[in-house]
Length: 201
Image 1 (cartoon, one colour):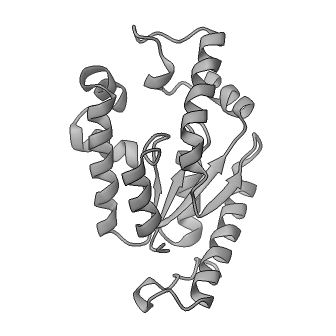
Image 2 (cartoon, rainbow, N blue to C red):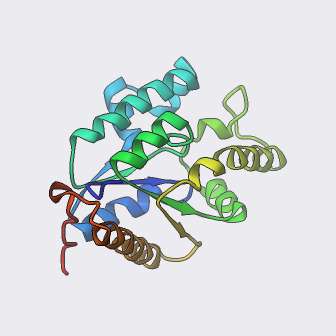
């Protein structure tokens, strides 16, 4: 585990892209949205990549973009909901950064996603149309069940609710500080990986 990079994981709608820039600012880090980096590198939005190339091809691009962050320090990365739900990518992230799971209840996720205007390819039918309410919830529950074993391997887990993002950011910062302090206390953190002091502290 390294404090030089923080990888936010969790199901779509858990608030990774909203919380990420605020967390980065508090830590004095930079922020990167992995989906945005994939889209920039491929020259097409994520939804189009899914539609034209398929999920398997998208996951290859996503894994490449994830590993490219290993060349950067002082970075908070908001990953896609499935980015770390694959063993090679998860193992890499657990070694090269601190992985934070933003855990939300299925009901909270369903509410957020149904209200969102963001296109979520995995929550559409074969024709690209929105699923019916029952089909949507069945798809959400199935995906969440499949990904939860990966999410729960994170170094840090923070529960997110439906309220303001501020308290969640505070909880993530506290959890990170405690985790990094334990690492330093065990003497397992090299000098180059010492924890930068959060801005304002």
